[in-house]
Length: 68
Image (cartoon, rainbow, N blue to C red; front, side):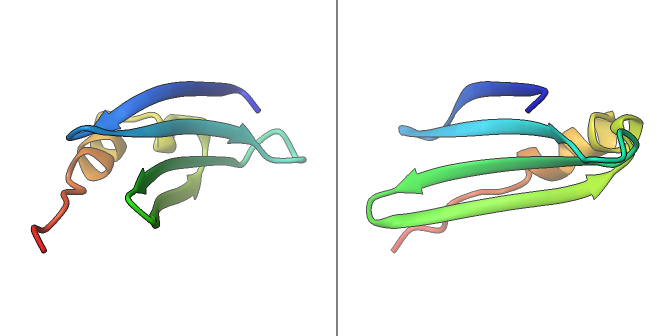
């Protein structure tokens, strides 16, 4: 694991993870949210530059909950 950060989506807790692959060139970026009894995961894979870019952040930030 490279980084783990506590985040929130509305009032729900989550985690933002950055994981380095075994080759040291590929990275996994994931956001996980536990909302009531559901787990939501948003993931992407690529180079460290790709998964930490402003474009990647914009994609991750676009996830929203739809009211029931």
